[in-house]
Amino acid sequence: MKQTTTLAVIVANRGFFPAHLCESGRKEILSVLKQEGIQAIALDPDATKFGAVESYDDARKCADLFRANRDTIDGVLVTLPNFGDERAVADTLRLSELNVPVLVHAFDDEKDKMTIKFRRDSFCGKMSACNNLRQYGIRYSLTSLHTVNPKAASFRSDLQRFAATCRIIRNLKNVRLGALGARPTAFNTVRYSEKLLERSGISVETLDLSEALGWVGKMGDNDKSVKEKIDAITSYTTVKGVPSPSQIKMAKLGVAIDRWVEAKHLSAVSIQCWTALQEFFGVVPCTLMSMMSESLLPSACETDTAGVVGMYILQSASLKPAALLDWNNNYGTDPDKGVVFHCSNLPRSFFSKHRMDYQGIIAGTVGKENTFGTIVGTIAPGPFTYCRVSTDDLAGRITSYVGEGEFTKDKVESFGGYGVIKIPRFQELLKYICRNGLEHHVAATRAHVADAIKDALHTYLQWDVYQHQ
Image (cartoon, rainbow, N blue to C red; front, top):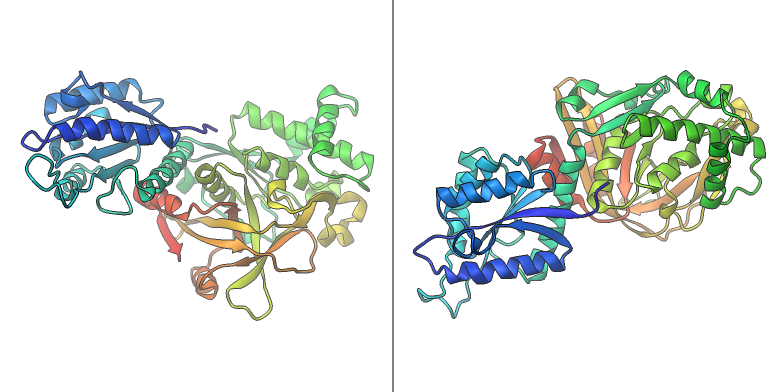
C-alpha cells in the first residue's frame, strides 16, 4: 500500500487582482505541503505568470502537466491567493481527466491590508470556484474554515484529512478482495452483493475451502516455506502450550493463503473461519489473520467481505492496522459504554498483551485439540474510529456508518480479544444499527479518521453515509 500522498496544485489567479499574491501564495502552499510530507506537482513559475492559471491557455498547460503525472497524482489542491479565475480552475480539472478528490482552499484577507494592493477577495472567489465546479460536475472537498492561512494548524489538519480521503479513493479503485470459503450457514448477517461492490470498482475473487486444503495436503512438514511460516508465527506472539502439530497446520494454511493472495493480487481477504476448518483440518486461522491485518492486508472472519471493505477503508485512512469486532455487550449501566469482542484475530497492535490460545466457544463441539490458533488479550486504551459497510440489496445501494470513540481502561473478565469502549450517544448509534437492520460486526482502527472516511464515501463514491457524532 502506497504510504505517501501526491497532490496536483492549481494556483488560481485573476488578472485585475494583485498577482503578486499568487507568487507568494504559491511558495507558501508548496512549503506547507512539504512540511506535511505531501508531494506536490505544480506548474513552474515560468510556465505561466507565477505558475498560476487564469485563462484557458493556462488551463491547457496545467492539464497537460497533470495528465503526464496521472499515475502518481492522488488528489488536487485548488488554492486561491486572490479571487482566482473560476473557469480556469474548472477547465484545468476537466481537461486533466484525473477523476481524483479535489480540495478547495482560499487564503484569508488581513484586516489591516484591505487596500487594492493587498486585498485578496478569496472569500468571494471560493464561492464562484465551487459554483463552477458544481456546474462542471466535479466533486470537491472543503476546508474547515472558509478562508484560512496555510500555516494555520486547522489547514494542516485539513491537509492530513484530505490526504486520508485521497488514499481511500485511490486504494478502493480497482481493488481486489479475496473470499476464502462460504459464509458460515448461521451467519445470514454477512450476506452481501458482489454486484454492488463491483459497480464501485471492488472485485471479489472467491476460493473454495477445499482447494486451499488441497494445496495444504501437498505440503511436507519440513518444507522450507512451512518452516519459515512457523518461525514467523512463533516470533509474532507467544505460543506456549500450543501443540506442535497445530503450529504446523497453521503454517501450512498460512503458506497456502499467502500464495493465493500473491497469485490473485489481493489487497484484503475474508475467511470461513469456522467450523469446517476445525472439524476437517483441526486448527483455527485467527493468528494467521491477525498477522495479515497487522501487515496491512486486512483479514475478516466469518467470510464477512463487506466487513473487510470497512477494514480496508479504515486502514487506508489511518495507515494503521484495522480489526473486525462484534458490538458484543453492555458495560454495567453506563449507556455510553460497551464491550467489543472477537475470538480473536485482532492485529497484535490492538492489544496490551497477547498470546495464542484455543477457541473456547467451539472447543466443546469439535474438541479443544482442533481449535488452537486464536490470539487473545485485552485491547489497549486509546482512540479509535469504527466503520461498517453494507450492501443494501433491496435498495440497490451501498450504505455505511462511521464514528469515533475511545477504548477505555475499564476492566472486564472475558476470553478472546476484548475491550471496553466509550462512544458519545452510544444508545442512539445502537438504535440506528437496529432500526436499519445492520450487522453486529464493525471494523475499527486505532486513530480518529471519521471525517476523512465520510468525505471519501459520501462525496466521491456517492455511498449513503451516516456519521455518528
